Image (cartoon, rainbow, N blue to C red; front, side, top):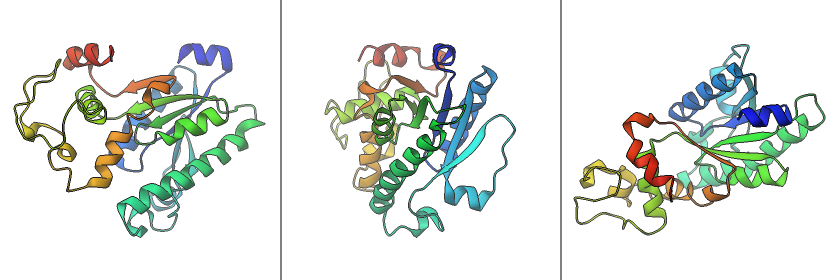
Length: 225
């Protein structure tokens, strides 16, 4: 990210999936960017903003996008599929609006760091000629398992454990992400976690929230994929 700041006077907008487990890592990343002299804005949904009324810490700027359910958020949607579809449609439109609003300011947006659950964000970034960075909140080992499942290299559900995956210890079915062990339980969420791999090869950067020393073998192997 250092080169982006030097060449472009970077303004990074980070867009997390609207749950705490995704917002918190992205917020910490934004604080890290700010400590390096990069302007960082965290984009949360309008519902979360009006409900929690978060205050800026003076370093990370808070901006909003819409998931289409500004009053009630997820609970207002009739189904998981409906919420995810609305989030993509309305999120794309309002993220575009946000980019346009900053275009003529002293701090135009130069890079979108988007939750890996939002592969559609890369389309928005490229539409406006911006850099796009996919941010994985899951560990590298989990990402690797999803990668194999997405490309059909790991059958779902797993019927014959243990599962032998290079770079990982032998895994039982219960060791795998629950969406893969019981795909019929939450089919829409299964599709969500698999789709995060769909265009990752086109992203300008891929960021993973992990501890390298704990996953060095998995990191080394997936880096060669």
